[in-house]
Image (tube, rainbow, N blue to C red; front, side, top):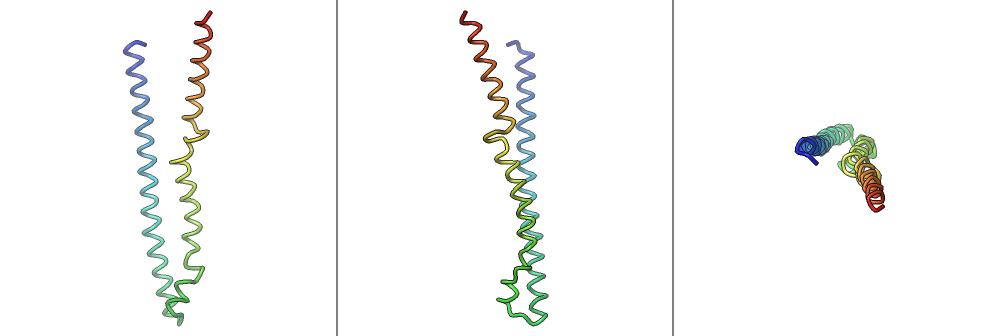
Length: 113
């Protein structure tokens, strides 16, 4: 492999790594916003319910307080899957590894003769 191909391959690896870091950072920002916004919404809802005559326990254990947590949490779970697990079992990295493996196997079998 000549130096030009090595440099190109190195640049491609760098760009893939940079995208991966950006994806992970994006997930953690999403998680932080999820926690902050949902805490704010939950506290406001509990306070409003208590002003309407509910006890703290009634307001705290009201399912309506946590609907946003649940709905947004599903979206957050999908985001986590895309960032952390998509490339795991059958993601694009798996496909690239398999293609390289088959290409190397074919090269080896041709060189054997």
